[in-house]
Each structure stands twice: as C-alpha cells, then as structure tokens.
Length: 271
Image (cartoon, rainbow, N blue to C red; front, side):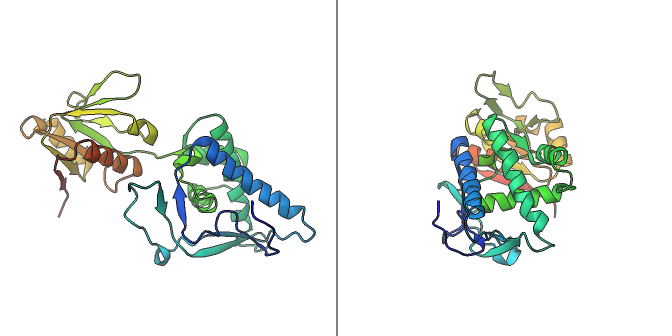
C-alpha cells in the first residue's frame, strides 16, 4: 500500500512508469482488489479525505502504444502510458467512478466462487445488482477497461472470459482435459466451436496431419469449404472468427502456431 501523499488522485497501481496488464492467478487478482479497497478506506479515514479522482489509462486512439500485439512470450501486454481522470465531484464522470467499484465488487465475488463469466453475463449481473448505474453493455465494457487499467491485470485474471465466435474444422484432433478427443473433420459443415476459456485452450492437446493452417475471413466461405470437405483434397485446418477475430480465436491460432511451428499459415480474405 502506498503512503498517503495528500493528493486528490487515487493512484493505487497506476503510478508505474509502464502501464501493463499482468496475467494473475485468482488469489493474486483478489489481493489487488483488496489493496484498492483498503487504499480507499484509508483515504476516507484520513484527516483530509480526498477521493475526487481516479487515475485511469487514457483509452484514446492517439494514446495507444501496443508493443508486439496481444500475445507475446512475456506475461503482460502494454495498454498505454498516459492517464486521464474520473472524478466523483464531476457530474459527468461521477457514475463512471462508482461503476469501477461495482465491477470490482462483482469480479471479486466471481473469483471467490472460482467461476468465469462473459462480458454479456457480467452486464446482466450488474443490471440486476445496480440498475441505476448500468443501463447498457458499453457502460460495462468501459468499466471493465477502467478496472483493468486501475488494477493492472488482464480481463481474464478478473474472471471475465472472452466470448468466442471462432470455429475450426479439418484435419485436427482436440482433447480437452478429462474429455474424449474431438475429430474436427467430423463436426459437419458448422465446424467445432472454439471455447472462450483461455485456460482450457491452453491445456487442450492438439494433434494434426495437416500441411497447412488456413484462416478464412468470411463465415459463409468457411461453411462452403468445410461442406465440400476441401481439407480432404488439401490437407489443412480451417479456422474462422466470422469477421474481426476475437481474443479466444486469436489465442487458439497462437496455440496452433506454437504447437505446430512448421505448418505455414495462410489467409483467405475477400478483395
């Protein structure tokens, strides 16, 4: 915990020179939430309470400074190095200030229960718990980003699971822990749905005799290629995220590229 500085800004973990999101174990994420609450209580009990501002990462496009993309060999991802203020005394940002603590409260409960939720499920939980503060999904999404910036840990570390749109088909066998292997060439034209649980993906056993990994941008084209069983003529694995790729599908591709480093990765997109 920081020593009291007499300033109106609650820094917590945000005074680090480089702003990054650690990948934490559940008990480590809970500890960061507890430290944040203790800091708030300490400030409230001080002779000169000053809780007007939260120092948060500036999420404007001009402030972005991603290092090597979202998946690297190190355990953090860069967010940015510039900060903005969310003030309790400013009518425009007061609700955003409260939302940060509400999201932290729900995340703490999720971590205690050793569960995971998607951001959509989190929205419904918050809508039931605090309808005066959460009326739309975008308010939840922004608040989650603020909590990530404040605590310096990833969404996944807070128990928030990536919602996946990804599908895989072709010459690939997948075996999740404690389950039977799935033959992705026998899942029909719809393919096999990629889970949003990154921990489960990380522990899935992969086997293939394919010669290529082919990323297909459009779901309709993926469906046609799989329906025609093109992977029997061109020994390959087809992957689609139905447009812009979500985190889970990108992580799945990252697992494949590291598990099978000799397989070339090709991309099929429209003009």
